[in-house]
Length: 122
Image (cartoon, rainbow, N blue to C red; front, side, top):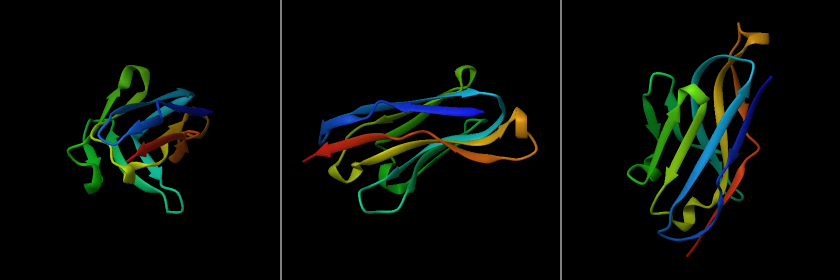
């Protein structure tokens, strides 16, 4: 079993900052990548940022220069530092792990956190 616990969301004014955290636990065999997705109200889920086990990163154009994804491989934890927040950043943010567990090590899956609400007021 692989479990993701994401946290750190909240209510912040435009221009403020938040740091999201996601800790992965359980029977993890391998991690291809971890990242963050978000789903604004009434819209589809979208990729925000991702980081591979090797450290390469990928960001949505809308957050480049404002958000930074980082990791602590020893703790299987990923962070998203969000600066200069805008109202359009308002969404439920979901942590994602793409990898495999010991019980199903031959296959890779997307594992998801429960989501944490980020609300940015204007």
